[in-house]
Length: 364
Ligand SMILES: [Zn+2]
Image 1 (tube, protein in one colour):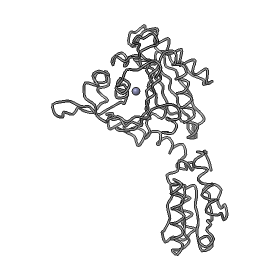
Image 2 (tube, protein in one colour):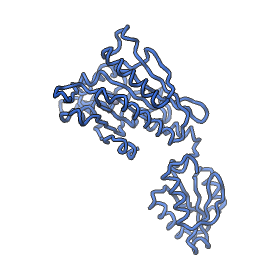
Image 3 (cartoon, protein in one colour):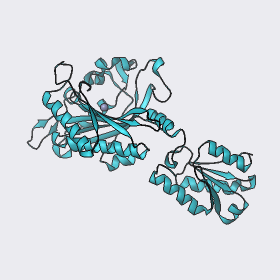
Image 4 (cartoon, protein in one colour):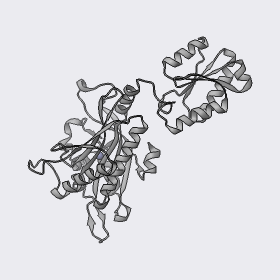
């Protein structure tokens, strides 16, 4: 993810887990988000709040210096851990927790840049979901009510600009989108991407949301070509939402049988007898040097049983080593899906596994 952020022009940032209470008053969370926040802490005559969101910190980074129209868009991304109070009754495994890490980003840009920025966000979301093996997804565009109820923040011009940009971005990427009237957040229109997993369940995941409220509350500015101060457009954007929840979804989707690049243990080395342990450890060191997550099964089990255990644990590759392998610098390679792959030189086996890891292929 970090590689992807950097190659797509994001700056990666890291922000504190607590902030002064006043920050949350300025952002408005102290008011409209209070029931989702943990209790305030009092320290040295000041009040602090465990963060339920990363946004206000990213805004402070934006505000840290005077911005010119030339340096926009500013894209700030963070794997940021947030804390939200959830009633104990709704907590559910990895899917609903009280502290979780968002793949969070905020984009600050000019109005003339917004459509391209939305296209980039959606393309990023599609690329990421496809890489993780999800090729079915649905998009929903949540709009306001035209201003009738007065519950939405922002001007009609802003809503029109935001909704048009979201719609056009979907058209450009040929993403079919369901329009949901009067379903927007009070601070701006949004697109939500729901993926469909292996057994047809839908999971709300990626979101791109305009925010017409925070730039005003924090007095965000940039200096335009005309030399005057202007308010930037701000977007919140998350691709997985919560990393913890996304892992829960991945485990369900793959039923634990992860593709090689995602498997917690990618290869296990299986010595036939204790006298092959030394060579087995050497093989494991070589795997580790390539960044491949591996283990040696040094138990007293017979090798067929070791294979069975690795198979049950859904380890993608098994490297069996005995007298012949130790002598010739080879391994007997097994693949979880296709079984025995025969004898390979150690280099050949390593290159094969490494190739599958770096290509992030969905299957071996
Ligand atoms: Zn945000």
